[in-house]
Length: 91
Image (cartoon, rainbow, N blue to C red; front, side, top):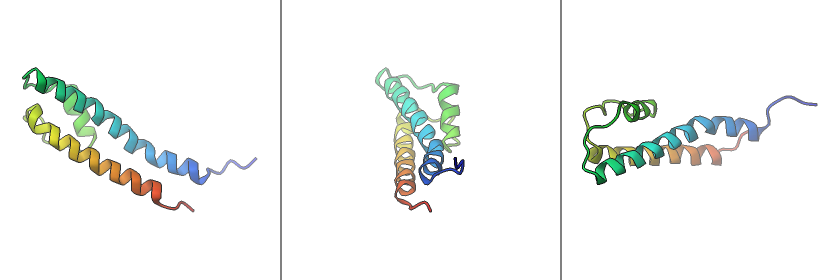
């Protein structure tokens, strides 16, 4: 049996980091929206770390209302990258 990875396997493995970042950003966005509804302004260290892991640095002093559009923009960028990856023909 051939153990070489298939093009599908290589594509899915390439998508994994993007999907992981998108899932993390979804959780942070939900958290930020709940904070905003309750007029809370202190973002947790966990949320800040998740933002940093997704490439969003310098977010420590920002309030949820300022972070929400930043997170949405990052999600859009990651979704575009994921779509490009999926469209690319793997040979």
